[in-house]
Amino acid sequence: MKDIYELLNDLNIDESEFEEMEVNELEKANIKRSLKKEINKKKKRNSWKKSIAAASIIVGLSVTTFVTYPAYAGNIPVIEDIFRFFDNGKTDKENRQNKEHGLYYDYKKFSNEINMTKESNGTKITINDAVFDGKTLTLTYTIESEQDLGNVDISMPRIKGMEAIGGTGKTSKIDTNKYVGILTVSNIEDKKLDVAHINWDIDHIKNPDNQTLIKGDWNFDFSQNATDNKIQLTDGSAEKNGVKVSIGKISFNPMSLIVYYDQEVTELVKNKWDGVDVELEIKDDLGNLYSGEDNGGMRKDSSYHVSGSKTFEKLDPNATKLIITPHITLRDYNSDNFTSVEITNDGKKEIPLPEKPGKGTEEFVLEDIIIKIKK
Amino acid sequence: MKANDTNYIQRLQQQKEDALEFIVDKYLPLIKGITCKVLIPLNNNGVIEECINDIFLSIWDHSKKFHGDSNDFKKWICAIAKFKAIDYYRKVNKQIEFTSNTLDVNTEKSIEDELIILEDRTELIKLINQLEPVERDIFIMKFFLGIKTEEISIKLGLTKASIENRIYRGKKKLNKKASNLKLGESGI
Image 1 (cartoon, rainbow over the protein chains, first blue to last red):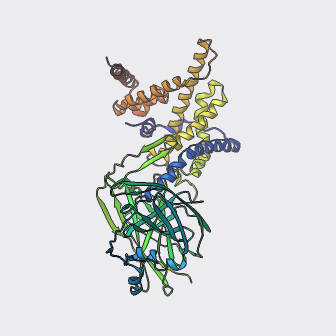
Image 2: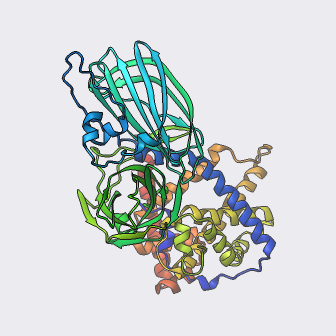
Image 3: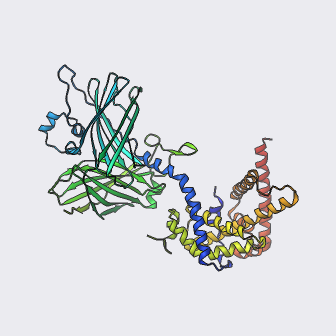
């Protein structure tokens, strides 16, 4: 059914019969002021929705790996570098022989040892290391529990000053009763913090496989300074089939590099597909391929304009150029891969699945974006 | 980037505030002209001001429903202005009657009244949607925009008698549909 505004749009009226009236600047200013007041009243009511929507895009990136170890006596693996463990699932000894790089290759070197342990309800949680690059906090932790936790689920820490956060987490069983994990918390807003005040208040942990819930109180409060970093503004972009990806800036720090990107799509794509995902593949002029992790992005309410960032392993000091290849996936959301909930002051409301003609997925690759590195 | 003559509709649809300012600058004289012409007899500047605000807010809130170029946009906002102004005129007139008939001191409209006005309108629009396109246009012009039958006949290239005939038939149709609606609702 059409509403009155659409009906009026269809109507071809003769506007020449209408007469203009004199208006002075004061009247214009008055109207603008009261309109802005009204609009902002509405916006305030909606602002909650926005940050939640931003956060909801990200949740669900949690990946779990599972490694079993022969549990005979005296062979309890000691993992000094949990970061590296999650690069390739190998212990320290194997890592020393393995020169292969990974995203977390240099994280241990620039991290701080936190070594805080809290025990509650027979379960010990220890925070081992923390690194903060101004945008993303990376933590490693160890859990010791009598109960079988499986690929344990754990809540995310909060960081003061970050309003919308995205992140990933992985926990692996390394021995009977012993688990190690890594998680990242990224500020989705483009705002650099010099220090992260972390409050991690865990009131339960859960085994997602058999729904066992362990309640308790593990509360960590600590601060972590940001590592040095250098930001280079860039203006490279690539466009194809109605999708445009631009690289706005790159931040270099001692253990990683962060690529900030913007994604825009045309009306045509927007009307056909429910979602557009961007994967960035990064190489340098020496042929190194960089592995990375998504930090999440912010989507401006109903548009498909996404501003996001991805963290990659640190730059090879001899590289002079970065070659960024955006891989695009156009998606159709269905009940299997997408749910969205809107939380407002009036309560929770499930957002229905969008109905658009595009079905399945469609993938394509944009042209390389080449960025010269300023030294 | 700021709104200009070529991008203001797009920016308005993206809910950019500078586009709203732009249309206030560009179209306020016209909107004021339309609103005043209808509402001057009420002799109430407050109502005129409120109505103009309401017009711009409606344009802002419903901008996504608009399709067309900047000439169509002008027509569209003129139609909204005329429709809103008449709506205000009717509402205020009703209020005056209401207070003069009953000696109740209650001059404010109750929430129930507001709801009835609102529901009447959505019901009516629902009914109008069921009419044939030509009849639909005639009805909107005649009853929402208050355009005279002669003018409608010139615009649509039909005779005055034919317009009146269609209005009569349309009314009959609406009447039937409306009573069906009521019957259906009361469950008889």
